[in-house]
Each structure stands twice: as C-alpha cells, then as structure tokens.
Image (tube, rainbow, N blue to C red; front, side, top):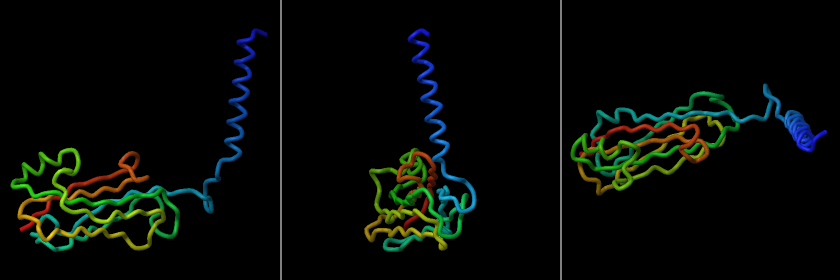
Length: 166
C-alpha cells in the first residue's frame, strides 16, 4: 500500500473508534435520564404603560417560564434574568432613538438584582426595579433580558417596555 493510503485508513479507523466510544458514553434520554431542560423566560409588568410611576416606587417584574419542564425540581441550563431602567427622555422619539439596539448604557438609572436560575422553581421569579428618588419626570425604557449561560448568545429573549415617571 502507498503511505498516503495507509495514513488515510488509519485516520478513518481512529475516527470510527472515537465515534463508537462517544456513543457508548452517551447519556440515555427518557424518564429518569440525567438531562438538562432548556427553559425560556419572558417578563411582563402589569399596567406598565398605563401607570404613571413616581420616584421611590418599586416596579415588580413577573417572569414566566415556558418550554421544557416547567414544574418540579429539574436541573436546567443556567438562566440569568436581568432588568435595566434607562432615562429620562423628553419624547418617545428620543427614547426610541437611544434604545434601538438595547438599553442606552449612558442613561441607566436603576437595575434589578440579577436572578440566576439553575433549577425549575415552583414559584415564578420576580425582579424588582426601584425607581431612584432623584429620577426626573419623563419617559424611561425598562429592558428585560433572559439569557442562558449568562450571555445574550444562545437562548435569549429581551424586551423593552416604556414607562412614564411623573
């Protein structure tokens, strides 16, 4: 045999061997299997757009899980839930221009503590953003984000809610 053909055959055999070992070590899928569930979270603020908020108020954000196993004590891929308040903006146009591709980092006035989940909770998580006592009247952007693995890469959802502070 030629040397290149011998090398090609050796590489093919090695690859087949690795594939067989990988299959033998694979985790079983089904009831009782040790697998991670992937959950997606979305967030909403009740009456956010119709309420005039005031400095010092606390804005509760109710997170809802969907997809995968949504109840019980199952392990999931870690999810980080965040909320950021930026503003004030004089007009809705100013708010929209400044927050086109995410929260306007130069105008962040408050953040909720990050919630990190690694198991499915029986009760829905709640984030709370406290409006600073010094917040000026105007329009504010309330960004929420749910991201797997602590980054917005992979499974992620983000949303922008406009609130008014009077």
